[in-house]
Image (cartoon, one colour):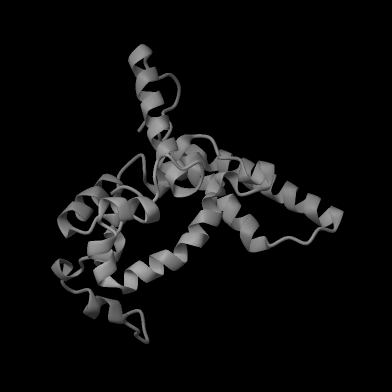
Length: 202
């Protein structure tokens, strides 16, 4: 762990891109199948990053295409919070903000939000399972032998890592992502996509 007193030190610490390889912690499988965030190889990571740094993934494109939809979610969130306040309920604001963020991320990824804000709950226990997994994630991050040898054993991995057979949490999310992409691919085979392409289409 590096602690440094000023942001300008970043340039000295990260001066050589070849030395900026992520640690094995990110490749444990605890965060699902391989993706941009868990890619360890510097060149592969650079390629994936470059693919996401151009339209339609840029902030400008996102703002122009999706701002009104984000506004709708903000209004819904405010309306729900007003309802809690009017009823005199005690709520955990950090949980509600996390649910809002989950809806925004699911909306960007799958076009429609999962409904955490609308239903005022942690849909499919995604956030709850994430929090439960933090202890394991921290443990695996600190114990290298366990991370590199034990977790990779087939039967052990079934106990600790998410599975697409799970009915909630990261496993469900992995399954849902696969289902949504497969469904869109099938629809595209039957009929050309109409309307403004969403992020799933891109």
